[in-house]
Each structure stands twice: as structure tokens, then as C-alpha cells.
Image (cartoon, rainbow, N blue to C red; front, side, top):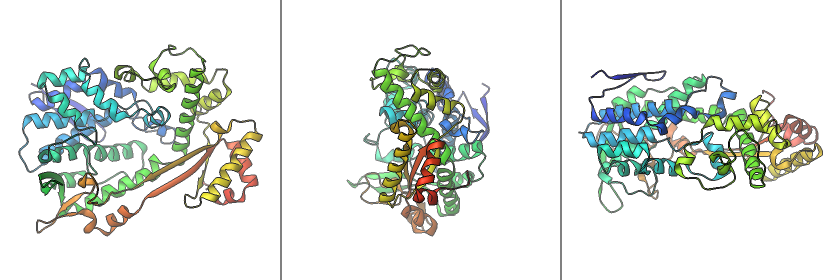
Length: 445
């Protein structure tokens, strides 16, 4: 039987051998409508408004994660049976199926949790994914779902396989750093994946009850490659994921979705999508079934933005037109360590917005974010694998930060950001009357 070949900009050719039971399962899962929906959900949301190449989908990323997970499992220096390979490959491919359109904005506005919907999509007994998995083994859907959810009990002796899907060195991160870096055109999302792959190890530790726990590790020979991987992730967050214009667009989208949900609850209807469409019901706080949730994708949001820009609600129209035509809010980076100055600038911005006849709740937006580039070893942490273990030349297993000054510093650094996002005319008015804001503004747009 000829293999199925998929061209990929990161991994060149992804080949699935349909005579291999685990790879054949991947192919069957890939063809389900639930996974195909990810073609209509962008991986980086609104980042293409800044990085025009960032048009790749969560489907492409999910294929890459499954490919990396397969290579990681096959590189482990242990025997891995077919049933385990099926479980890990399926979990890797399905890890993002619960993401909605513009997932981070949707989740902030509605409170939905994509991991919950990932689990429910897998466990829906009438759903395609459940049916495909159950044809292999009646317990396989439940074993795959166990990879998603921190409270799930996982066999300690098989924890190494969960590490492949979810850890600080998992297949997900290793793909999105490479893929997002390539798509955005930045030159920082690069590291030596092949070196890491060639030096993967499995080590045994003891759990809280003294039970044997098998974990994923790397050889000391890959220490520099892992450092590069962590550096790449650190810079991708600062340069791409937290880019000021990307984040301003996301805050605008949050605002328009919040406003739409509020007006929908008040009885406003617009046309475009059906009045009972899952997107509109979700924005208004109504509970959706898993199948209803999985009907929604990016195209629904863009359709409603086009409707809202021509509607009667001036706030919706202004925000929607800004997103559609890239007339985005401007930003002022605020010092997270000076709450007094932050409060003063926010008050002054609200004052300017009111004078200009704008609704403050939708014109003065505050973006807060934080990221720790590397989580060091912490014995009090419920999952001791928060760190990346390294097998030294003499066989000792130590957290990577013990042998790397750079990673040690990364683990001590929490990047915090507070950013004001406002219409251009509000920022101009703010800078005219607030000296503290003028000092903070980066003149390089």
C-alpha cells in the first residue's frame, strides 16, 4: 500500500504508512470533519495584520505536532507497542480540536475553555472522533482524552508519553516555534530540532507515593540545542505573540465580541448569521453543546464583522471597520511596577475619550500579559516534570538549569506587560496633556 504524502513547509514531507496501524489511525482521524474544521481556524489569529505570512491554520500545526510526536516516540530508547503509539499520535493530532476562532479573545469574552471542548470532542459517543478511536479499541477514546486535563490520573510508568504531548519540551511547542517563526518571517524561531530528537532519553524517578515514574529527558549533549529552543520561545513571545499591534487588534476583537454579546442579550439582531447561530449564542453567555461549539470557525466571525460595520450600533461599527480595514488602536506601554502612574494615565485616557464622545469601556482598553520563559524544578509543584531533565555524562539526572546559567536566569525572569490600547485620536490627546505618557511612548511605530 502506497503511503500518503503531505507537503509541509517545516517538515518537508509528512508520510503516513497506511500499513502501520498507528499511522493509519492518524489518517482516519485527520479526515474527520472535526479535524478538518481546523483548516478554517488560523493558528495565530490576527497576527497576519502585522506579519502577512502568518496565514497558517491550526490544521497545519496539528499535522506538524502529530509528525513530531511520532518522531519523538520512535526515537525513544524503549520499546513502544502499537497501542501506545496509536494513543500518543492521536492525542498529538487532536490537541487543538477544542480551539474556537480567535481562541484567546473568544475565551476571555465567553469564559469557554478549549481543553474542555477538546476532551468533549473526543468523548462524544456520537461524534466522528470517538467512532474512529472506538473502532480500534473500546477504551482508546478515554485513554486519549486522559492526556487533556491536569486532574486526570495518568499511569506513572507511562508519564513519558504524556510528556511528549504536554511538557516544556513537547511536540506542540517544538512545532509552533518552528512553524510560527517561518510563517511570520522572523529569524528567531529556529533551533536544532534534530539534535534534540537524537538525544532523547527516558529516566525513572520516584513519585510522591514512592511509585516509579518514567519521564522524558535529553542527553547533556543536547544542552545547547535546548537552550536555543528556550531562547527561540522567549523571543517569539516578545516579538510575535506579544507584539503591540497584534495585541491591540486582539483587544479590539475582544471589545467587539463583548459588545455584540451585550447587544444580542438586549434583543438586537443583525442578519448575516442565523439569529440562533452558535457564535451569537455563545457571545451572549448561552451554554453550547460540543457539536454546536465545533460549528464555529473564523469565517463566522469575519462575516459578522462585515455585518456589524454597517449596523446601527456605532461602537460595533467603529471597531469592526477598524479590524476589517486595519485601522487599529495605538498603544502606550505602561510600567507594570508603577501602579500609581498606570492609574493616572488610564484616568487621563478615559477623560480624553469621553471628551471625544467615545464610550470608555470600548475606547480605553488595557492589555496585561505575563510569561515565564522556563519553569524551573519545584518540588512543591504537583507535576515535578515542570522542568526539563538532563541526563549527565555520569548518568545523574538534573534539571537543565543546574548546568546552564542562561536557563537558570530564564527561570528567574517573569516578563510582565501592561499596555494601553486606544484610538489614534485618543492617544494624541493623551500625549498632549500627560507628560508621563509622552515619556513612555515608543516613537518607532
